[in-house]
Length: 155
Image (cartoon, rainbow, N blue to C red; front, side, top):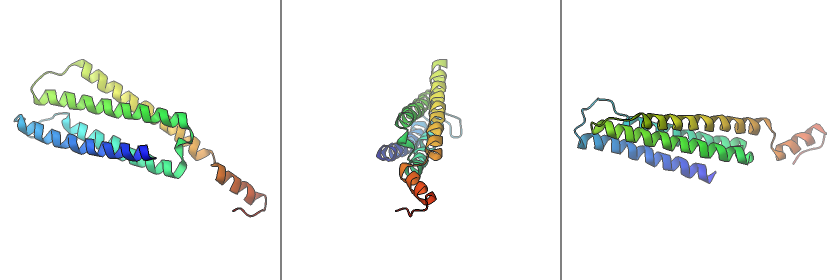
């Protein structure tokens, strides 16, 4: 659970920093106010997909112990974090090129698409792990339910 807390905090710092970069980089380069650049999307992706989603996962982990499916949970973390980082990095790269008046390449869009696919794969794995955790009774709860049904008091 500490890893989720620290990862969420790291995304919060990265999200705020990317917002600051967006604001200052566009000012520094006299980029027209109101004109679109993907730098603002990086700020949003890091805060929403990194910070907020991982806080929700932390709450679900605390409630359902999703990590009891260790392999699934590890796959989720790796896939999801790789996707968020890759997508955000491509948004920053593409947005910076826009501000500098340079052309982007299809490679950047392709890598960003790969990042989104990794996020999606991570979420699918997360829901498989969540389903297992929700539908499989915890060992302690299972014993308490068995004791209740047997007519003996549970501790």
